[in-house]
Image (tube, rainbow, N blue to C red; front, side, top):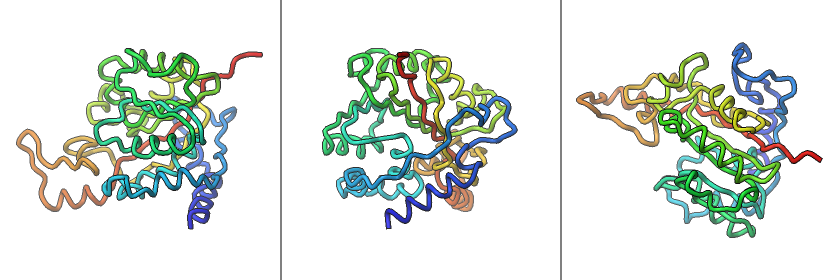
Length: 266
């Protein structure tokens, strides 16, 4: 079943330019498709990763979200392999990605490093990390000036050829990040430009975690949607019908990006 499911995902992503390249072709602020590799990596049967995703030691609520989070496919897209040193930024108390990445690293001879304050230390020697994972954090960093210094330390921590893996609630293009970030969303072009300014190369974009049902117009921002499901704030409470309609949307529309630190020149 896993082989069939992954083959279907890969075929869909490769066959559809809209999916493989994830982004409106008219958006001048997004990179041109020429010169940008959009090929999906082969979906290998990584038994250790399958086991980490399927593990009953993961909270039941975490596993219930897999259908909308696509952890196996997303981690494969980012290039996760056995034995890598993976740094996750701000894993949070729930530790959704941590509950997969940490046991996977332990099972494959890799290393998992959680970091909450990157500018105070990345937990690895400079130039030794294989991957830095950033999930749903840029909306906070864009509001208080942390994005630029954080990206700089990510770049320093990664080895040449290392991957910056990004998943982020996605705002519509053409909007100012100062307007969208308070609601939890950031334009994809803003993240791309910020990472490029730090020295990263955008290698691929995917629609694995896209959700066209998310119109980004919710009473309490992205937190109105699953899994947070905020239903009341500042005297405003959702009706039962409103709550049901929002739950039907599912989780947010999210960009999934793979950046790479350039290899050292020969």
